[in-house]
Image 1: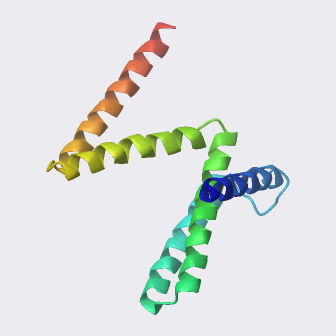
Image 2: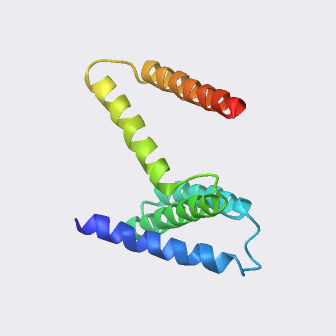
Length: 131
C-alpha cells in the first residue's frame, strides 16, 4: 500500500507543476515534456552502460517526471486522462501477458487489440457524425 501512497504524492506534485506551468515562461507546450522525455531516455541508456544504480534510478525518475508532466499537460488540454492511460495500460498488458503465458503470440494479441481500438474509434466517429 505504501507504493500507492507514494504514487499519489507524486501525482499531487505533478498537479502543482501543471498549475505552475501556466505562468512558467520555460514551458512551451507539450513539446517541452516530449523533448525532455526523449533526452532522459538517452540518459537512461547511458547510465545502463555505466552500471551506476543510483544514477540510473535518478534518470529513471526524470523519465517518470517528464512522462507524468506530459500526461498532466495533455489532461489540462482535455486530450488525455491519466486514469484512462493507466486503465488502458492495465487492460492491454494484462491481455498480452495472459496470452503469452497461455502459449499465445504477443504480436497476434497486439494486432487484435489494435483492430478493437480502431473499431471503437470508428464507432465513436459514427456516433459524432449522427449528432
